[in-house]
Structures are given as C-alpha cells and as structure tokens.
Image (tube, rainbow, N blue to C red; front, side, top):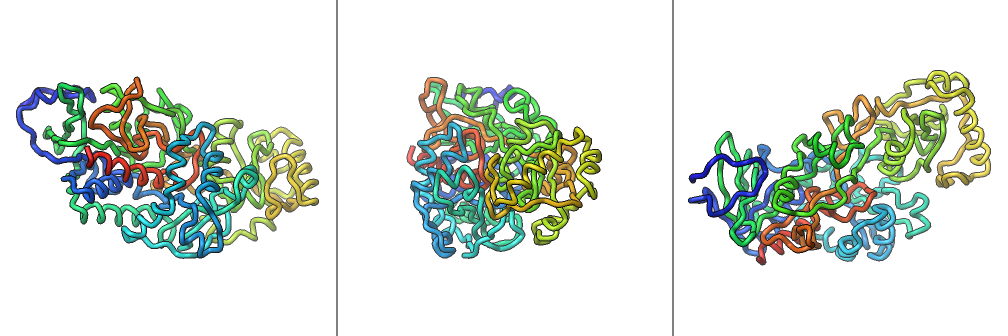
Length: 494
C-alpha cells in the first residue's frame, strides 16, 4: 500500500489508498463478547467476516468479568428453579433499576427476546446449572446457575414481581473466560477470521461518506482493511482513557478500573471524529468493595455514621449511592453474631479492620462525631426489634438488632469485584463506563442529525445500550451480545 502519515483518529479518505492489504464483507473491530456475537451472526448470514483484536487473542474485558448474563422472561433455568417470569415483568424491573432514562426501545426488545437469547447461548455450548444461589453477593463462589440481583429488594419488589435473573455459566466464581471461549469458538466455526495484535486507528471513508474500512497498526506496520459492506465497532468503553474520563465521567478519576486495561475509547473516538453522536457519556457503573453478605446482616454507613440506603439492594446501587452522594469513607458495621452467620465463601477472606466493645470506642476508631453512630444504631435497633425498617425498607429477612461487640469493615481493604488485578485497591472503589456511541436497535451509528452513518455499526460498551443512569450485573454481557448479534445481521445484509 502507499499512503502518508495517518493523523490520530481522523477519518482517512478511501481514494488516498492505492491498494488495500486485506478485504472482507464485514469488519468487526474488537473481539470481546459484542464482537464475537456480531462476527458469529454476520458469518452465519453468509458474509466474509474479519475481526481485528488489538490484544493477542479474543477475550477483552468480557473474559475477565464474572460472566453473569442478565436474562429472564421465563428461561428454562428460571422455570426449573420454580420462578414464573415474563417479558413485561422483566421490563418493569429493568426500566426502574437501569433508570432513570433507560433506553426503553432497546430495553423492550431485549426483554421480549430474552428467552431466545438465552437459548442462543445454550446453542453456542454454554450450560447453566438449574440451581439458585439464594444470598446477596457480588458473585457466588459456587456453580449455581441463577442468582438474585436486587429484584427482591425495595423499591423494586413493589414495582415488579421479584424473580431472579442473574444467569451464570456452569463454572465456579469468574465465568467470563468460559463465556468468551465458547463465543470465540462459535465465531471462528461460523467462518470469521481473526487478526490479533492489530489495533484499529482510523476509519476509512468513501467520497459519499460511507465507512469503507479501517486503517490499523500491527507491530509498527500500517495496514489497511477494506470492508465491502460495513464496519462494526465493538472496542469497549473508555475507563482506561484518563482524558476521556476527565471530559465525560470524572467520578471515576483516581479509582480502580474494571477492565482488561485496553478500554481506551478508541472506537468511540474514531467514530466521533467522523461526526457520530454519543449518549450517556457520564454514566458509569461503580463497585464499592463492600461485601453484601456483611451489609445485609449489618449496616452501611457514611463517614458521619449515617445509613443512606437499604443494604440488601444490588451492590452496584449501594455503591453509586455512596460514591456519588455520601461523604466517605464508608463502613460496613456488623456485630459478632451476624459475622459468625456468614458462610465462609461469602466473606472472600475479608476480616474486620476495627473491633470494639462499645459503640463509643468504634466511633472514635473510625473518626466519627461522638454519638453519631450510636444514634444511628439506636434507631436501627428500635425498629429492627419490630421487624421493620421505615427509613430504608430493608427486607425483614435481614432485620435484627445489632449488639456490641461491633466491627467495622473498611471497603478499601475488601474484595474488588470483576478485576483480578486489584481494581479499587487504595480507594475501595472501581468502575467502568456505560456511555458510548448513539445507535439504533440494529446497531447503526447515528450522526448528530439522527441519521445513520452509512456502513458503520457499534455494539457493547462502545455504544450506549439499554442503560439509563443505573446498572445491574449481567446487563453489559447481556446487551453487548444481544445487540452485537443484531449489528452482525444488519451489517451482513448491507
């Protein structure tokens, strides 16, 4: 090929390229869960598919995740565990939990076709044990195939019939690797090829504004890829790009990152340089490394010793409530009886940092105003004696007066969900971004006039999916694969 120096991110005119190094029908950029789903569907539809992956092989942040898939509407696993669900019930919960301002058009489709999507995963070789993990946790260290993700907590249990929808592949603990192993195998078996260690740098655009391919770099060499039908961006979010965080989602600055280290917003930047619109760029998932098994049996308090949420909600919701709205540090307060009731596998090896015989001693150790925690505890215990929580509506199952000696667990020393490399160490907080390119339900990337950019699609965390301002585990892998599939089919049909 022959071309001059490529400017960062800016689109490259197709007529400046004398010969392409590689050609295909559909070019997928990024081989995480969304890219694998898109590649599979495009190849299954008869397209010649090529996937570019900047790392040494498929996986991305998806492979390092817990592997939970948020699915419902009446899956075989739900039915086997004795739960009756339907798409309307699932939609009612997710609209509230992923809101405010969840994308209702995408969400409606996702719920209506969730059972089919579950069967699609089984068709790709994933298995799900028909057992329920019936305890609050970030992620069970069991092989249970179904888990609660806050559906049975207030206020969601007043909005929709409580049904668990966290579907987990049949493996212990982190299951993202297994999910990606099966999806990558399926994409390759369908005919998709992969060029690893290849980083996309620029979109190539025809004279009529149609995206026609990608300029990439591999081992210092510049390569050009022609996409005869379409390019699909499945490059992940931007939590690893400090400048983009500062510009769009500064709440995560200085905290841990739930990613594979390569979520630098490259696909988003390439598309916006072409005029693509974005949505919800400030929205993030936050994980405060506090253990749900401790919190439901005790209290979550801020630096002033005050409760601020029902502790049995989905962990990401108490995390956002704390980090966005409360003075830190945050503490999990529990008594000896509650601590001893916790199954060892739900403790993740975490031990209390402070233990005291009196509330006053614990307040002093934690640097709280004198009497602050004592007042909170008195109110909590008075109502817990009657089995009620009029302030925050924690479920009666978990209500019991807390009696000294008391312990405080520091989230800064806790388990960091979703990241084996220690996300959140130092602050007790980790997260990732949820905003991205504005897309249709079929993944077409829209410009600022709301018109599709010809030949360009996106899915996964590179796009803005079903989320509003909330998040539930399994909705990234779930919507990434669901809308990745739709993008793959649409691109193949170009």
